[in-house]
Image (cartoon, rainbow, N blue to C red):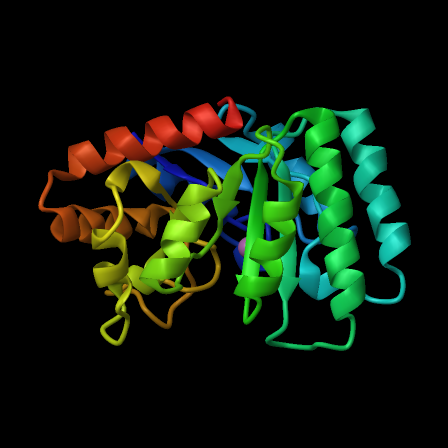
Length: 254
Ligand code: NI
């Protein structure tokens, strides 16, 4: 059994074959799929899917950093409204993204910190998006870490020193398709840390692993990531599945 800890399979890219894509995932051993939210525009799509597949799809609630703009306070109100209204399995995805736009960096930081506090209030794990912002993100997590904070640095693709800082703060590394890319040195990085710190993810529909690189990603393809991790640590795929699944189950309570 495998768990995809990060999949936007509720997105419009799957408008015509969502059920088939979920069936392919299930057939490949992916028995649980965690759905991170983006913003108020994605909530209905995500929850419709979670309600249709309650034993397969587990929704998170949060505001993505690239959706933080002048209206971010309204967006955070929507996040809080939904957290009061129904069960979610974590806060995500949240974080800082300075790749696309740095205009709202202060608002991004404020939204990130605010949502970390919501995670503490509801005792939920967080799923963190980091892009060109490792130091800024880590600083806030370190300041907010009171021993209760836990979660995933999603799509981790940093250096060995950064991986170790993430682990020292009590967080897991979310490993996806990037690990399989020819030009990636992520295999060397993860080799330097214990496999017990990893969870699997796809970031569907993005970042499809080799041999599907460049195509639309889907949760079924997580098997290629599990195979690559098995190669890196020279262990069986079953061992990778056992460790990463147990990590994901413990973190999200699923
Ligand atoms: Ni995502």
